Amino acid sequence: METVMEDEEYTYRDVFLPTLIPRIPAPALERGTVERRRGRDIVIAIDHGPNSKHAFDWALIHLVRLADTLYLVHAVSSVRSEIVYEASQALMEKLSVEAFQIAMVRTMARIVSGDAGKVICKEAERVKPAAVVMGTRGRSLIQSVFQGSVSDYCVHNCKSAPVIIVPGKGYLFRLESPSEICEGLNKNIRSKK
Image (tube, rainbow, N blue to C red; front, side, top):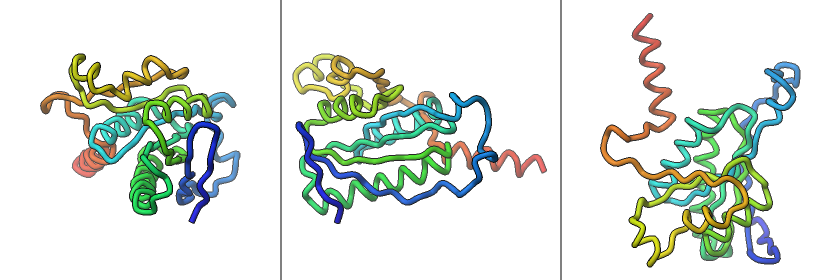
């Protein structure tokens, strides 16, 4: 069992993800300038909901590029609960594998105990990413005011650029998952042969 770490303001557990990057000599990886190879850091707030997955898929398709590093952050009520930790770890491992298969990016993951908005902003301060991506439930303004909203909190308090992905309404706005896009491309390639 990994140790529970305590920072000044919150408690967290790092998730040890499987190593997916193949061992390739450095010259074989050179593509572009040194700055391009450095890549960017991108924080993605995740949970077990469909809006979070939608935001993750959107980031893989529209934002992430080769050499970037994704930081998956999941806020929970307690990191000491093994059931919560194991479910979160399984989700992060699945998303990490998908990120590597689709975008060939490195992934780091952390499960943090505390209020989701504050936790995401704190992680953004620590990582200093190019963007902080998160989904939203698409509530009305009145609902957000009365019930509070993690994305609203992050828009007003995050020091990095927050990217809020609103769920699409209807088929025209449906975002295909990266795996569906790859399957479609493979079918097109096979049909042309």
